[in-house]
Length: 455
View 1 (spheres, rainbow, N blue to C red):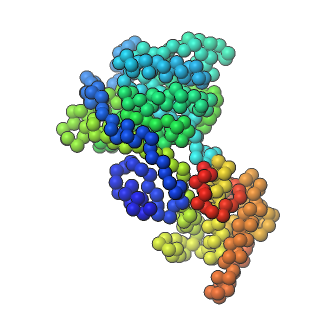
View 2 (tube, rainbow, N blue to C red):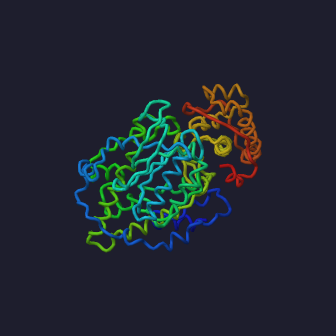
């Protein structure tokens, strides 16, 4: 509803997801199962205390000498690739919480979204405080730490949890820790991580400190993790692997270092941020305020990706020849005839549906440029389609007849309108648009409101 959309847009920076009025979304939503626990959460006294941490931040030397740990041995992280090791780690955290030794853990996620519609989590990074006695593992590590087919005993504070092989086990072992209000989860910019945990594992976070929210409250020049690492730990973040393929196994040494770095220093950063918040002169800036804002992040609930039928108008804007056309409330620029526009709308709908059914990204199914080229020329045969889109992507080739049928159907619907308005039908093959990159296809569904069942 439009009022829901405006409430989201004009309110806090987080909260329930906002939808534009014309979006196709599920007709009902389940309530957040932990809403009551999150909203009624009373912060533990240690969360509001200010530790004796220098405001200038923590140097690597200070960090290493606090308990004699060498960062170089921690940067690879311990690979958690089987359920036994995951159980050891989670039992150690739970026991530490009961004994009053573990109050916080640092978390981050790495996901894959290139060749998938919804995306999925490939890795969870988890770090403990250096002062905490670490768990011991006897493992066969697939990473570069030890030789192939060798086992070794390892201790550490930084862990890489393989969610591809442990997807079934994470709700059982890690889920109770994430929802335990007595264990604070320290994360940075968790707006995506929270719904991803729900989507892939059915896990919910209760009690969160978002260091990104803290940076915003303190009005830093940047709220990014790279800025906090540079400011407080004198570490320059290397973002070379930000778009890497996290499905790869085994992960290389550099990818492991990159992943570990996201949580390795996060508890140190949390300590300094908490001190700055606690000593801030404004009553509007405090630890409690950041925890309150972090609560709202926890209340984000995963929703399937909605579909916006009018989204094709953006393609017309991007690749048309800038003739202004009024489409309801939208003013777009295009040289498409009504038949060509109808074809583009049908193909746009088909692409979204195909991406959901095939679990592919929409741009892999068919790029915007290719979609516009096909709609502009409205091919009637497979050979004509192949000439327009070369090379023809696999899904488009496999479902080419569906594309032709969709174009034909729009032509049949538009022809009577053209006769009534004394318009001349557009001739296929005459229009020109930018060349293409890729494509894909699948059956059309008569009722687009069933779309939420497909992702």
